[in-house]
Amino acid sequence: MPKDKSIRTVLPLKLLADRAVSMNRAKETDLNFFKDMIEDDRCPEYNGYNTRLSREQGHTVKPGTRAVYLPLIDMAPSNPDTIMTALCQAQMISRSCGQDFTIFTADLQLYRVAVNVTWAYPERFGDVVLRLGGMHTLMSFVGSVGTLMASSGLEKLLESTFGGVAKMLSGKKFPQNVRALRLVAELLLRPILSEHVFQSMSELESFLDDLCRWKICQPKLRKDF
Image (cartoon, rainbow, N blue to C red; front, side, top):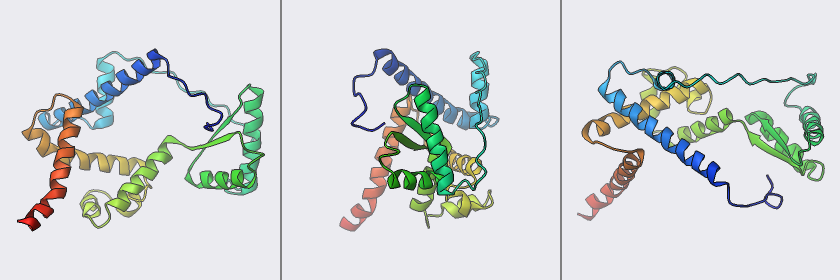
């Protein structure tokens, strides 16, 4: 939403409370998963762990999302004319529903084309808000991890179990790279959780921050002495 058009007010207390409860529950579940991973050799992986937990707590299965497809545009998806046609169609549908702004979601490739189209016609598409899908946002995050961790040994570590690691660390092979990085996180946390007891995720995060600062300062201390 454009900043000059958005109404900035305090969110309802119920919404803020729901967000806080949801975040705390997610952190508590993650910490319990790490603890069970250390104590139980038969602990399922993260997805299976959450599925089992949901069943034990009696959560009902949410109904499936219903999607309605518009007529196909018989052109290459990355063609600027194709994206412009799709933007115009999305604008028309949004206005018919009484919406002042159009939220247009695309993958990495088409997002770039859509941005160029909106920049070329700022007056025509001033009410269009472009965003990446959740999966592609996470793919970009994984790609940044691969860039920051280049030549750190992470690639060689993953190559012992996974194939196509170079593509994985560039953000491709989405299911594999998320699973691989989760396994790396589990292995790195295993010795820490085996030696220390944490009552909350905030305690674990604080410990990791202190450990990171100590690792950074250690070479400097060695140099000083």
